[in-house]
Image 1 (tube, rainbow, N blue to C red):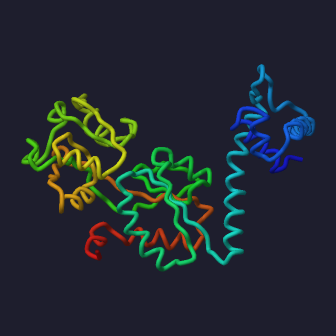
Image 2 (tube, rainbow, N blue to C red; image 1 turned 180 degrees about the vertical axis):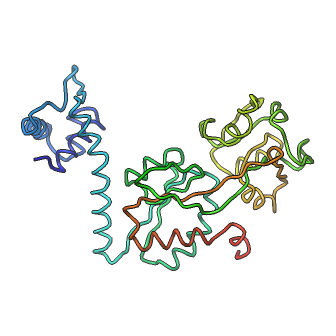
Image 3 (cartoon, rainbow, N blue to C red; image 1 turned 120 degrees about the vertical axis):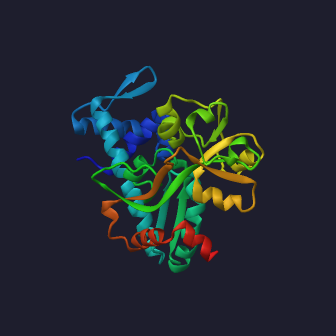
Amino acid sequence: MLERSHLLVVREVERKGSLTAAADTLNLTQSALSHAVKKLEQQLGTPVWTREGRALRLTQAGAYLLGLANRLLPQFELAEARMKQYAQGERGTLRIGMECAPCYQWLLKVVSPYLTRWPDVDVDVKQRFQFGGIGALLGYEIDVLVTPDPLKRAELHFQPVFDYEQVLVVGDDHALAGEAYVTPEQLAEEVLITYPVETERLDIYTQFLTPANTVPKRHKVIETTDIILQMVASGRGVAALPRWLVEEYASWMPLTVVQLGKKGIAKQIFLGTRKTDDNIDYLAAFLKDAREWTWAGAKMRD
């Protein structure tokens, strides 16, 4: 009979690359783990690994078990963590994955009053899922995904939170600062500053530059919003960001917003959740707060 311990063995051997390293992680001796591996293969009636020198390579059966382990083990681990929290009188932890780097400021506006209303719920923000959040949501590594690019899956809900416009931001002294809108060709001689995201996932490329067969003079990547806008304000380049975010910074930095093209670029922010979590009350409360807390409302309440 296939057991959870078998899936743990398959996952850790694949992660560590050897029985010796996996044994340390699983708190077993190498001989005990070797015995467990042999017993598992005997029970299944098929090899799980093949040896290539000192390395182990998964067979087709092993690859199937690894996929099963990657789907099921995170759910076990999440359930155990929640049971422990319940036992300690806590409601749980809401794990939020960010696939929208500039949305972190918006999230802070939502989380602050939410924590006050739900004192027995912790919030953990995982920005390392910025650029691969769907897999993290499906794999039970996060509970909510903040993204401008929802992916339809039968297991997931995506709810729109608010609309926004993607705009070009330049320094007040920049030559484009007086324009009503910019064309792709006008960015051909500019240094474009973006977050470290593939160009295939950047709106400034997919919806503006690429359709016009245009590229900027130089493309520079910076991880943090503050530094991006400091660079833009000092005349070191231009950037494409949500209007609401730029206007917040423009109140104290020399920044100007310029529309991208005659029609502009309209976007939405979505919150993604698993359908199996629909009955979690503190998750539903967070979604309700997020839908009601527009950026304009947040600024008025500050």
